[in-house]
Length: 407
Ligand code: FCB
Image (cartoon, rainbow, N blue to C red; front, side):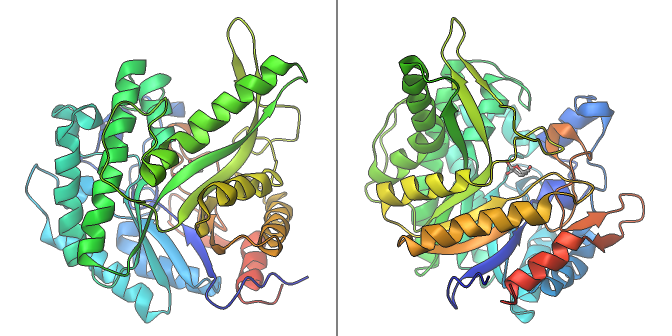
């Protein structure tokens, strides 16, 4: 079989600054880790030391034959104090971009990937409307200095950020408050829309989106209430934010806002990992089922991506890019099969007429997996976190063949 999705198809890998670079000392996550809140008391510390080794990492990506690389720039490093921008850090990211270009790799830049500068949190974080202006000022600086970038992700997974930061309280800022959660989502929707306009004013042919975490929700039992609840959860989690910034339709849980007119997505970025079962009861339950699990505890359900893509395409008729997809699998036992199943699903989607423009595997190498610490290993390369040595996994070899058109 061959996976040929067209000459302009982006075959990529995804990473994020806090998870790979190391020394993100001015960020809210660094503080959270210092307070011992990550599993096993782990801290990101030097992470993969990618801030220093970024050129080597780009070379490693090149060895996978990818033609695109999604990475994030770190707000807490670029603007460590309010209004003070670090030129060295900006030049660092500009070099990252130009080195990718030199190696024939299309950069896709994420502007916000879960972390915030501590000063922003002290000013009320994303609960405060002021966050929008702060974010825009930072983005303007980045766009003006980063060089030749066409693909931008404004905010990574606003739904996950709100779920873990403001509903379950599992992540910083450890809040459990529905009202605040709504406000944060509304502020992020507004920030996204304004950022879209700002980027386009500077880079007219830019392609801007968010990377939405999309899960496949299924009713746990055939009872009608499970179906009904599944529909609601599916809408609220997968579509509410996108509908807001695409159609200007404001439905729960996005709080009250008035958005600038027009569609603010040039493509739809989808991060896909797993499915969940939805069950109605005194306390409605969203849980994993009985399928084999990844090291992260996610059910292996690659086929779920097909329906998600189908529904996204039907709703927005806009090009789609899978901005993240991967599996925590330290032993590399299931990754090849999982990627294969994903690619088969993508083939079906393409044959059904979906405009699919890219697939980015999460992740280039093992990295710091947020509150789970270093245990879940998502890399096509394994990382030795003491020596920072990266070693190609069999699945990495497999992916390199896919990307070069051999498979
Ligand atoms: C996604 C995140 C990414 C990584 C993967 C495993 O939700 O965007 O940073 O942690 O999960």
